[in-house]
Image (cartoon, rainbow, N blue to C red; front, side, top):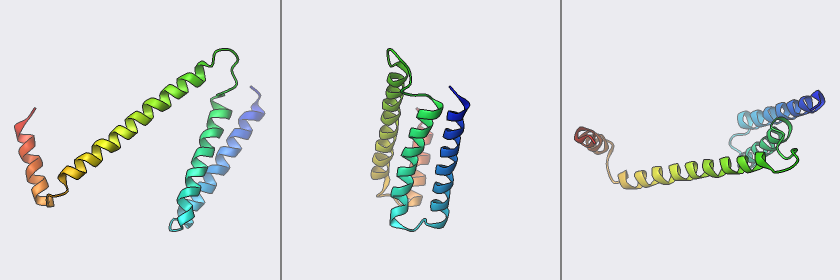
Length: 113
């Protein structure tokens, strides 16, 4: 791998980071800001995978791509499961006032496992 490709990847990553920072700092209230930040994040991911992790450049069995897809699947399971659990807990606890939540949690803590 030539150093030129690393320099190109670094410059692209730096430019994408600076653009995302400017949008997040100076335009946080605009409706298009979140969508553009998401697009910049996906572009940054593609640059990182291409220029630094060399994903898609290997010949033969695509072990890097398969391991990356497996990692992405596990990560999505963890994220979706966590959000599901937290929303379920939030839904079950919403009918309590803050003092009732504290008392309930202390009572449950005293029970132990």
